[in-house]
Length: 212
Image (cartoon, one colour):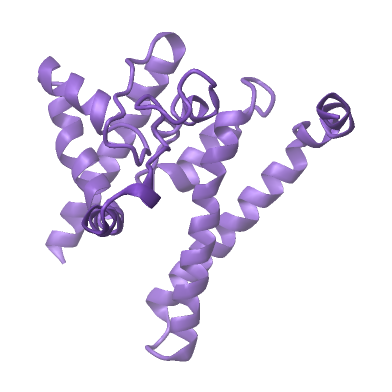
């Protein structure tokens, strides 16, 4: 039955560029349009609605990072770059934060172990630990700002700091025991470029916010 199901649903996993591009571009237009509305509209019902739409649209935009991890290299040219420019870098979640991370959650050898970045036994954890998990999750935007505006520049100065940052602060993971392996080859080069770009953006955001 599993083999039959795989054959029947095989076409469902085929990448259709026009669907991906249309979805991404429309999501970006809605997200940034609502963001502009939230800033420019007078305080009231419309601005409140714009804020809600903005949050939901950007959340949808971020969710594309999951698709990027499963798309085979070369099957959707330019999409990864476009997503990083429109969503990943501006929201401080460049694609390298999930690449070579989420796939470990699907691997039989690491699923449900300390090597699984997305496994946390919340049901068996103490209430205080669960509360702490929720609090830390809520502070993720601030953590990402510190990650790229403060730790990224130090990354390029100290090899010791670079190792710690790479292993512990370079993955969208919920498992605190997870340690990330070093990137290699073309992925390493992509990582460096995306990290540098995101660091510049995060620093610019802080400078602009402080100078207002």
